[in-house]
Image (tube, rainbow, N blue to C red; front, side, top):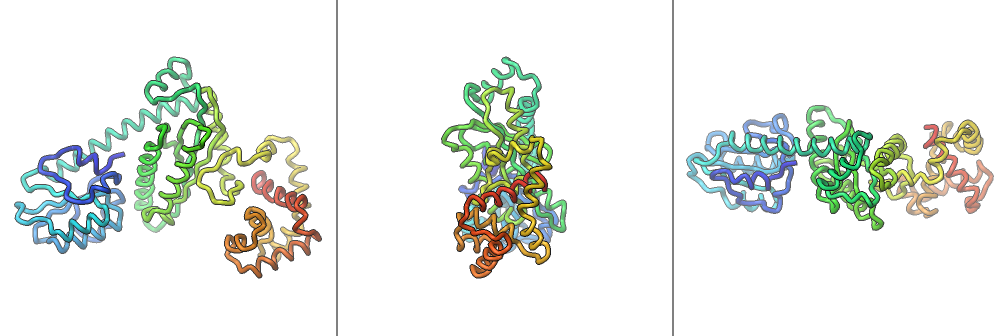
Amino acid sequence: MVTCRDILNLKLDGMELIAGEEGLDRIVSWSYIVQTRPYEDHMNQGNFAMIVVDDVRFDFEEVARSMEELYALGISGLAVSVTEDKEEVPSFIIERAEEMKLPLFYIRWEGASFVDIAQGIGALILDTDVQNKRTADYLYNLLFGYEINEKYVEKLSGQFGFDFTKFYRVGIIVVDRTYGINLEQDEHVYEYYANCLQREVKGIDGKPMFMRFLNKFVLLFEAREDKKIERELERILRTLDDSFQFKGKIRSTCILGEAYRSPKDFGKSYQEAKSFIPRKDVLPNARSKKVISASAMGIYKFMFNSGNQAEVLQYCNEKLKKLEEYDHANGAFLCDTLIAFYMNGFNAIKTAEELYIHRNSLQYRLNKIKELLEMELNDYVEYLDLVNCILVKKWMFS
């Protein structure tokens, strides 16, 4: 990925940074020459915007208004050029760019043209794409069993700094997207998210290998005992999902396979993670973690390959019959309530908050469960059996 820092490092003639140094690591998706409104019809998130102050279309008051609008739309940086350098950029624009941490460049009239800048950005993006493809090719071969011999492993070790005497695991990042009216704009948001994600992952200590594969993101990293990389992935995904550019549009989850030492087994780690993608939303995840492991299935994962699935389903149906019939007939959520109460450690306040209901409503549901099943909720063996039946049905038969 290309950042505003990379543009600064091009050292283009007459181009200087005058504000927003803290934002130099903002990702640049392409260049955009600012012309007419509405800007959202012409630009996309991550665009590096360029404006000419000519007192016809743009004076500095208009530049200030446009900078606010463009920033809200997600530009990565802004370059301003003034006809014949007859005015300096006003302090109020510089100060506002500093507040927004938006890189603001000034380009002398006789310096680099906007075409020069656009070509420079395009060349940087092309070079980055080539490097990313090379890494993706190596990882693809590693995961899907091509050319896995000592010479190939030695080459990987030298190029990526991997120590294959240690354990490594595969993570698959799955992105759930909310689509709006403008599908083209949605695709640009997704592309910008992919660039941001790649930048953050590449910055993790240990330098995981990373690639886009079909509609997912795949990474390979060292499985350390301190789980530092897993915690960093959790932070990255949560931060990106909660950022103003992506909040409400993108929700990501990383599913991890088991850890292996032999490169020939890394493909197995990928397949393990992949097999749980359809069930990622029903894995035990009381704290709504962004990074979850296939091992979180515990003993249940062995049921997927068992030969008595029909018997398992019959037992679960009999166990849950009264609850499911009541839920269906009354539009109720007794099964969900039973699970939530368990996941929240039988804490009524936390359970009510998670379900967005009043505590009295929660108590009514719990009493109804006791009535229908003729059991006490402090019978933890029986309660756990009910929880297991609900989870097994979700994982194996939903």
